[in-house]
Length: 332
Image (tube, rainbow, N blue to C red; front, side, top):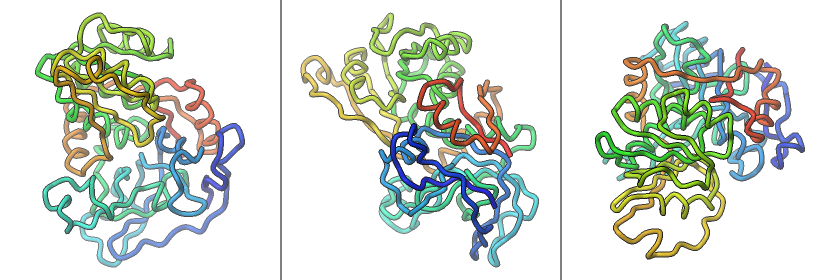
């Protein structure tokens, strides 16, 4: 089968993603063989290709926002059947027995594994996935619409929970790509005011079209103090900027697996008055179920830029250059 693999991590301009030929994988006991119909392209895939994230396996196949059909079943599969339409997300497995798993924080499991990092992902014609960690996809959602919901949507949803936005509060969003444009719509649907700070003029235009109350440059101050903020841009220099924009008692959630270095913080100016800085680490299956249920009940506008499978490398280059509106999606 055709696949795209990270053969030599480095700057995206050096071509770290290479098209390769692989054998179609065979599903193990509790695994499904999935024929990939669409796979959204996440900034995490870019971090893996460029070496910001150390590879967990050689020549890894990225991609963890996969919509496909079950093509074959492992010997002990009981939850799905051939032909079922499913989504494969970032969280690929957990131990199920550590203190974190038992208290409902499986995203913190020390033995967790991840699609497209610890096991080959959806930049391929087929992949395998543990049936306990995949999600049914409603037939009403087109493949390219559903794919970004599986990470961009779910991680944004968890980041919104971590930010502890008060009911009808004021939310600031820093960076406005695939995840942020979905998170903004969730917050707006719940009655929040949303202000967007991002360097891309195209992203600012999209934010206003989606109903956000303002959209300015990444380092510009919002028009009013923020009750909560989410940093989606992988830019550590924005952390002090976002903290200073918070009202007293506000929370900033950093929603990325990779972040450049954070400059020194001024305690009185940045953290005092009970401001909170917290991170977001992956998501739980419960988060995914909650968000997919929410998405099914609300007509979210999923803005996508579609690429043929053969142009996965171009999709990553465009993502790095901020030339993607919403989410980039590879289609079969």
